[in-house]
Length: 213
Image 1 (cartoon, one colour):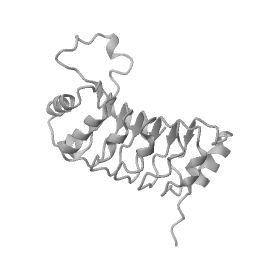
Image 2 (cartoon, rainbow, N blue to C red):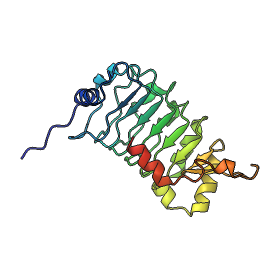
Image 3 (cartoon, rainbow, N blue to C red):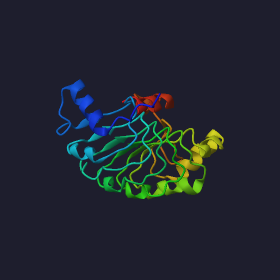
Image 4 (cartoon, helix red, strand yellow):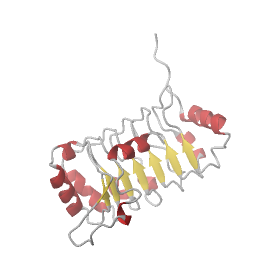
């Protein structure tokens, strides 16, 4: 029996509009997660989402990021649980994108991430990054404050304390690493208020929230 044809972006948008009663062309948040059959390709139909500030495409079978040039207001892009290998195709988001959710993909190299100069949050757990030389490319993101990186070979190959101290040293502006506040020698002691409400969030909560939005 032939495999079912992949869901197109156009079909996914139509399903979302029918389900929510909203018009994609004027919506600020559009959720196209977990389509069946899965979406395999981002195409120019995305140009219709000109008002979109948060676009969710997680849990599909997308291999390449493309066709985002018209999304001039996009601040949050969720692409967790796909087959994405690189940051190619995101160049047009450099002025607006603040959060990129990319966990459970196939990213090994961080080439091109430097274009996302306004990025504050990067969730990329469970990818394929192996080398500190790749991790160092995150130094090109001056506004990065919150990083989720568990499950990469680089993380798995380090003792936890070594990982946290080394990652924090290389990214001096980082405030949160793998769901926990980054503590530095010159910081004042944490108070109870600092730990609430998100200071004790489990990493799993972050990962699951990222892929089920």
